[in-house]
Length: 355
Image 1 (tube, rainbow, N blue to C red):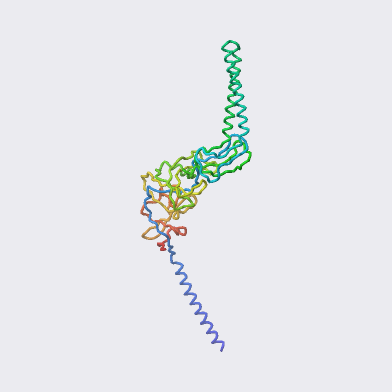
Image 2 (image 1 turned 45 degrees about the vertical axis):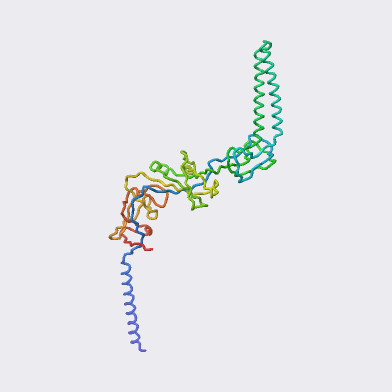
């Protein structure tokens, strides 16, 4: 092929490539200039209800529980209960070997008998002016000491028999037969399962708002039985904060259902229903719509005519749950961005997110 013809072909090829690139560049510039309209979930605010509920993690505890111990030392002769056994008030839990205690009692009885006879003889002699008054007082004192020794020996023998102070269930039996124990050694643990407690720990921010509410009902939901609602009632609240967590212990009591075995230590959720005495207009806000910038909390408010967003600072009530109450910054009827709000900027246009 001649050189001149080849040059013409090359020039034509370069010209066509330049035109194609120029056209593509123009189209990309047009696309870049088009505003990005982000899909967001639109939320129209409603006035906050004066009724509400809060959920708190709870731990089950027994209203009445105790570790049973002997008040005297000795050799465990019998252990008459097993773990998980139901017992009644007054039932014998365990006994100590009584031989030494009976011997001590017999000795104390003899000493008291002798001291009583000496006192009675001295009393007769004193009435006859045969002895001085101080001798009579001495015999009386010896009689009283012997009486005290007798009472102590009787009590010690009674203490060799350990009885249940209330009806309940044996939770633990850590000792064995023929084991030597000291006073205060736990022989068995007893719990009363007729009434149980749900214990929660509340921060000061919640405690300070108790007076603003009128609690209606409380319900316990066990983690092991989440579909069973157990009605509970407020029992007590500690006025001293825990030194580590700085929370306050609040207790609710409830009778366990007959078809559930509920034991201390089980995890649960306590749900409280309440009403608030509020005269101001407030709105409830889902947590997903609340954003933070430093110490400021804000939401994206949507102009439903232009569908543009603007940032609006809000003041929220402290609380626990899926929604929080807005104290100021918004009013019922306004529309805000929910899901997708993290990607917005002032003046940006949005559209409703269709799932």
